Length: 129
Image (cartoon, rainbow, N blue to C red; front, side):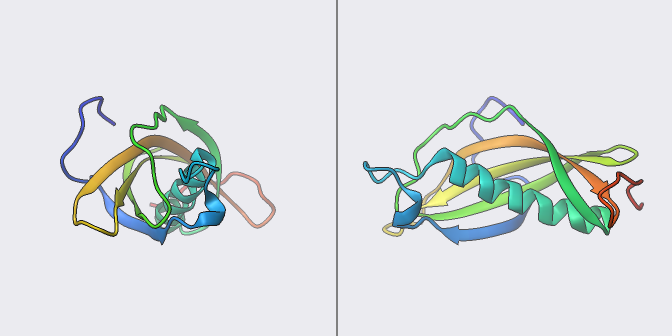
């Protein structure tokens, strides 16, 4: 994750959805918690595929909200695997939006999500390589 504003998303598309009125505050801006939830779901898609098992989120590092998300915006989450530990995976997840009136894509936030591979009983187990 870089402090400079990237001009293109990094990683693969793991989630795409529309920001709906029920996810917004009184000003029409989407709640940050909703956006973080979408990013967590998207990161989990890559983590599950990598671990070939259930995963759980154990940490989120370094999120800053750079631009607002409006009702009707298309939100796309991109994920990139940064590191695989014995049972954990660090994944950078970026959220980009496209307003329905134009083709411009704008990064709204990014963060490093850490997931742990777990078995059916919820205990950590090694990530399959």
